[in-house]
Length: 229
Image (tube, rainbow, N blue to C red; front, top):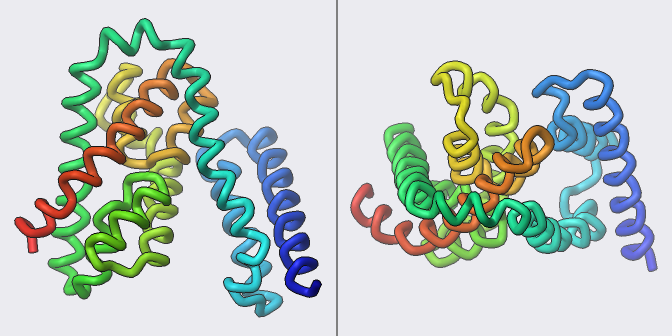
């Protein structure tokens, strides 16, 4: 009974944090006020201030985590609306996403290796740019630390949300294809949802790139790890 009440409290608290974050973002519409960033910081602060173990929070948080799958599936609706445009971009999407997956894995692995991290941590870092369920499965296959993989996925997603506008301006990336492939292959669902707020077409390209990236990363990760380590 106690576990049930804790779980309900965790779900309600998370929802309150997210609703508050959305209102803040609507009032100050800048990158740093993205709901995923503010709500994450709020939840972390509450857990630290009240000395609530992560395991206790996840008694309810895991139910919210289960909604990640349906949320990703919901992205199929704008994808369907843009299906005719996306069919014409099949080859650029495949090439761009594949290159994004290779660069994403290679850069992360090489930088972690040069920094002197253990191999189990590097294995968890390898699939950082794909959705959580896929990243955890790939990490388990490689022999990495599974919970750490979920953390790296969050960092990749939130990091993409925070710096994507800067990167787009820096490289003068104003085409919807480049923006969509970049966010989808680097920042998975979090980045895709952010693009969807501004452009359904960019968000649809990002959705395709995110799905393709998950497949490509799952296939090439073991080979790249063997080559780079």
